[in-house]
Image 1 (cartoon, rainbow over the protein chains, first blue to last red):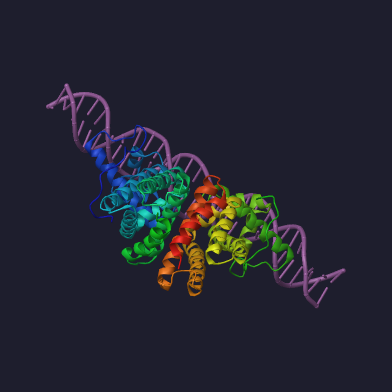
Image 2: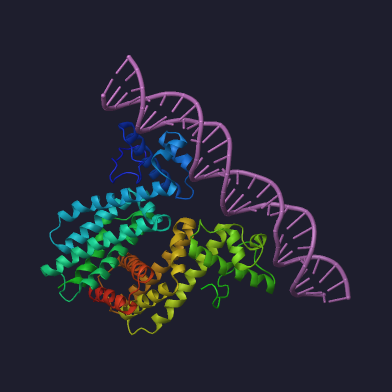
Length: 212
Length: 212
DNA sequence: GTGAAACTTGAACCGGCTTTCAACTTGCGA
DNA sequence: TCGCAAGTTGAAAGCCGGTTCAAGTTTCAC
């Protein structure tokens, strides 16, 4: 992190008419975004300062305001960026699955690996609950909806008990997501356990619990 | 909240030699703690100010520093207070349980009710992840250990499959806790669903998944 | 009733951080 | 090559809120 290969700007940039119109501008925006991720990840939102971000990025203080209206604005842009990173990291694991239950196991394992490699990303999304509640909620609503959709498809294929209504599956999707998030926090961020084993134990619960 | 019946000071008060030595002092400390809970619950940590807290409490600014060393210190005291409130609210539900699985269902339902009636408490504990990481971690480690203990006891009684090691049960405890927390966030804080139904759907998963 | 300890008060100090802005530089299209 | 739009700069304005403290008031043990 910090010095490694950095990412291209995913989402449409910083809201307003503040989008860069030049190659140079695009590079600068990216530098600020990467620096912000490092700074927020290490110090948390309120202990981070814009001066520190611009210093990390190697640009002047004022340059920040060419691209963002406020400290909150970068944070919001960052959350969207990371939310997409998580999704993109987990997606391929799902594609390799044999069946629905196997898919959820692979998804969890992949998520745990991501959490381990990007502890800071984890923290930033969590902190969004207080800094940018809308972005936080959006992230989890979207994720839960994806899980619920997979469960419904599995039920229609007969891999999950037919007795569950769509509403029930929404409840279960939130339960599964919550479990995954806390497992990541405990066993990858706070300590370091084998993602494969965690995923296996949890998946057994799910397989038996949901089976048709 | 705010104007209702307020609680006595649970834990040993504010750390240092800052404990009140007088009835008057005790009353003042309680007023500040209640005001702080309201203020932090409504505005979040960083948008809360000590002036605002003391104004709510009806005391002078300086009085705050008779009982606390800093803004963080009240917050920490508050987290401990609330952590104990959650535990005390759930405990009686567990005592009424027929068996282990029934106990977890009742615990979840009771927790969801608590979340609904104390949305602000919920937010305060969550925000502790960033304001007082140690207090946050303490809260969840303790809670997870309690759940894991119950699961191990159930296993030894034959209500949970004998195949689970203590370590496995710790993993499952974190999964269950995470599920509970997210269910509370989604269905009681962000929206309003029937705790009984949520708990029933989730419990079915657990019963089938863990059964001996 | 008395005096010392506990408690209360709020003005002022203090430092930090966000945001602004006018002067300056760069780079691209014609 | 030229000119203008885009981008960059960093000093300083302005704000805000945490923390201190010396002077005053209340409580309570004796």
